[in-house]
Length: 343
Image (cartoon, rainbow, N blue to C red; front, side, top):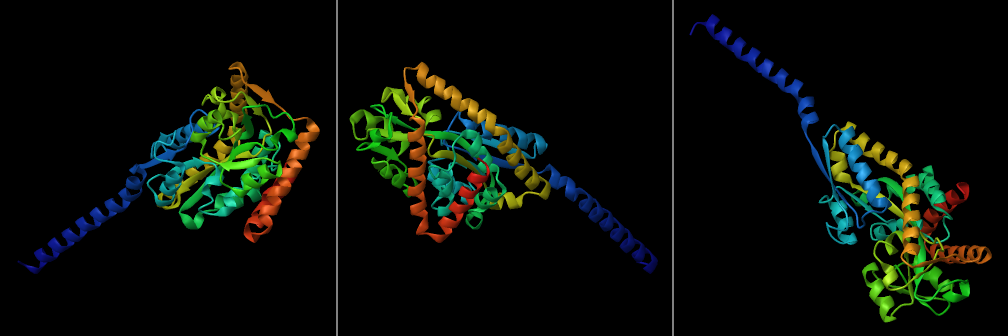
């Protein structure tokens, strides 16, 4: 082959390669834009503020990402028990979960500070504490070294005490066996009221009350009403303590695999959902309260002076729990300082 022909062929091949390479480089961003990301969103409840938040968050993500994020909702613990949901979110089989912070204590014990009785005195106060910059920095950052990326936190509902016989005064707590979570933040305050705290899962509460194993239980009216707890007990004393918050956690590895624009959407849509959930959460609580009385249940409030005494008693009990643990105490100070600022 003549030298001039050979050079022509080499130049032609080189030109073709350059065109192909240029096309591939040009297509790179387009291919990245075309990729979709499945996002399984898991939670243990249905038709409560957590579910409404999750549904709205999923819709916002799909819309704002132009369909590149494909959320899938799994309420009512369809993907496993709460501990399994947390593990799934840590290790990536679940991309997002909405679970009360006290269940994350195995990841970091500081998650528990939001469940401290006496921390907030209303739904509106709880949402303000959730939005406090120092609280958000603390709580959303927990678990970052354990596979979690926190994107939001909000108050789901206040707690009450359901009981077979009415608790109308603080003295009525004395001697009663009351179901709580297996946490010093719940057990010590209940003991400080003269009751015997009994750690028990929610599913066991109704039969335990019916059989007389316990006299009552701490929980939320948004759970008592739809799950027909009035079949076991009709009296609910609205102590408001502790507040039930919810963490919105995303799998960190999945989050970091997203393009930067989608990471921003995941964060900003979560924050927007947190800012918007307050009125809806309050409405759901009010509806559950009405549903309780409509079904024959009774809602009880302690006399104002006794409610104030309860708040002081349970707050002191929690403060004693935290003093023995410096990191927990520091986190508790952050949230209690925020609670004072936002009253």
